Amino acid sequence: MTPDNRTTDHQRTVLKTYTQMMRAADAVTTRMHRHLADSGLTGSQFGVLEALYHLGPLCQRDIGRKILKTSGNMTTVIDNLEKRKLVVRVKDLTDRRRISVELTPTGFSLIDTIFPIHAEIAEQVFDVMDRGELQTLGSLLKKVGKANVASAEESDGRAP
Image (cartoon, rainbow, N blue to C red; front, top):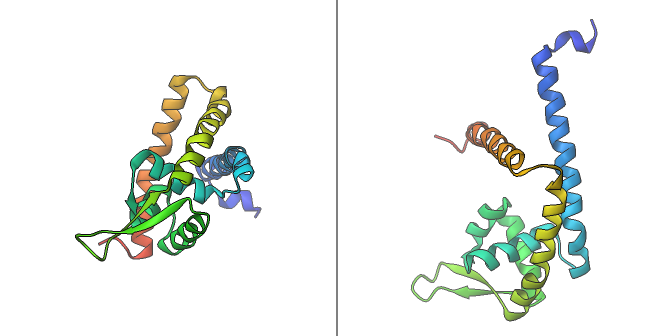
């Protein structure tokens, strides 16, 4: 019996689609993040600066949720941004347990300079699709993601 005989046609299609999605995601991520090296930023650091740029001050937990990073990873990322004086942690005067992260003027200037470049690269990356195809792709990816968030939480023991 060959390995192919142990999988259904549907399983082979799903596995092929998964491989295609991961290869595309890797290629897109590599291209989208290449320009960040010029600024000495990692993808996660850029994600933090971009979130603060568009949303304003946020607590570390909320930033992690926005850019899909764990709280432990966020601490390191924010520590490194703080060392470069791109962000600052500010204690909430009404709730001492809450600390928000804010862009410094230097951080704002940096993200204000590189975000337009990032947006331009994103436009180039997805230039192979028209608006309708982009919307369809977005909807399909959202559908797969939503269906699997609950499943992932259940397997991790986080869901009720």
